[in-house]
Image (cartoon, rainbow over all chains, first blue to last red; front, side, top):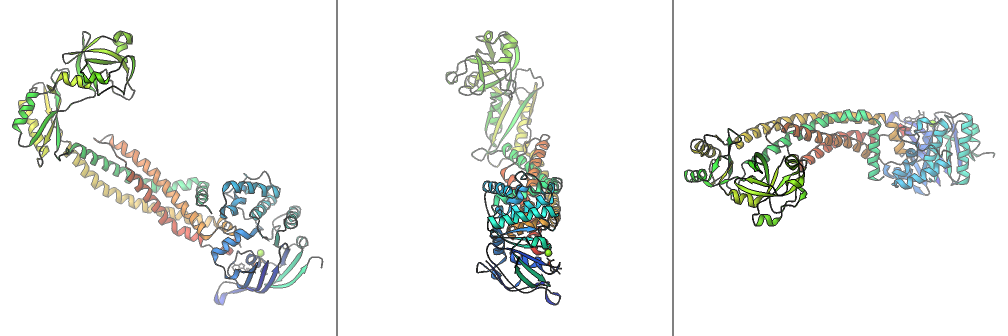
Length: 227
Length: 393
Ligand SMILES: Nc1ncnc2c1ncn2[C@@H]1O[C@H](COP(=O)(O)OP(=O)(O)O)[C@@H](O)[C@H]1O
Ligand SMILES: [Mg+2]
């Protein structure tokens, strides 16, 4: 599904350009649950942003279902994001002035769906993440674990091909982390949703099927869990 | 994203900070209100001038001279047929016609009800009466007018006062200008109306009182005549020779010159106020721009999130632009209403009504949207051009 070839990423331009990713080659198949690990500053977020179509400024090639994403325009990227990926971030990234239901429905709104259809779908996904009664609440009034569930609900509301999660348990206690991981595993196993997750935590990474280790912008190792 | 959803999104955002949104609107409100006020007054005076100095169908202009008796119970109405003949012969060069001006509503006249004399207010009914509801007896019919039946309707109030019951009033006689009418019905007056005491069939009334006299005459001038000067001449002629010169005065109110004076003041004020309003709108626009820039930087995270879940740069830009436009358009509409109200209030003290037209509304709407677009565009562009990766860091 995902085929990245010789991807390089620079922050800044000219003399001051900072070379973050070096010749990354990475392939991910449908239905996989991949962890990306590495020291802080090693380029994990940078890589996952490229995978998730958030970053359109990289060198190299990226084929998504054989489509040459590296040739796409910015407008095409918005559409690609909306229809193919769900995002889960460490700090949840919910809009505080909107209700939970409006936050979760946002991707569908940008997909051009009607309110009525959105309402029903939002209800379903909030149930799926275990928050059936939260729709009219504001995000601030929820616990961290609940907020992360909301953001997972938002990530899966469009039935995306894959999820990217940047340290999804980084801001949560270990009990809540376990619950969130259980939710990810359920999504991966029941719905066959591909998940690509960045994490610091070895225990969390061991819940996935494959671990990619990065150091200073280079892939150090790429192994199946337990192999 | 559907446009209606964008509108809702913008509206929601404005409601998050209602105080700030309102304060930002004030400049727009004041600017638009000032312009609408002065335009409404200007329209009013222009319409009034047209009406006062109205040209008849043939392009001739008309004026009026009224008689004001010193003693309001005096029998004479001021003008007789002789007066008109005099005017016709003396001013034939400039005048094409002189007529009594016929009042058909709220005519104050001395009458006899039964044997008792009193001053009453009479309105005339053309054809069959439809405006007033009959409570007892029957109505004035079209045929009453056609064959000059001398019948009358009495107000319920007066019937109760004079006869105790409505039924008792039926059949009694009313004498107006030496003609006797029979009361055939009692009517209930609409609350908005003057205190009308009697309704008479118009044709019967005019026929019986004939064209003998009146309290106002209507002068029609030939083309090219200076109507104001000529009317004054006729008024002073009447003061010397009029049939009722001893019991009252003949007055020509020169509405034309009065109104054109006001009109001149208003049109010079229009330029002045428009200039001030322009400055006010410009400053208000800067205020809108400032608020939008603040809003865009405060909501950087929101913009990032929207972009991440698939908003196009275009829809982000539209969202913020619509916020600015909504703000200024609401301000504009509020200003329009306030301006309308202010003009109506001011015109209470002036001899004409303020007139608000559709084009005033369109002006308020157009100018305020324009301010929103012009001053919202740059902040909206800034919002749309934000770098997603930098925001998400
Ligand atoms: N938007 C950016 N502009 C400039 N430098 C950046 C930006 N994002 C990340 N970096 C730098 O790139 C390196 C890799 O960052 P990141 O991918 O966030 O690492 P990780 O997620 O592994 O901690 C870091 O040194 C970081 O300072
Ligand atoms: Mg990171």
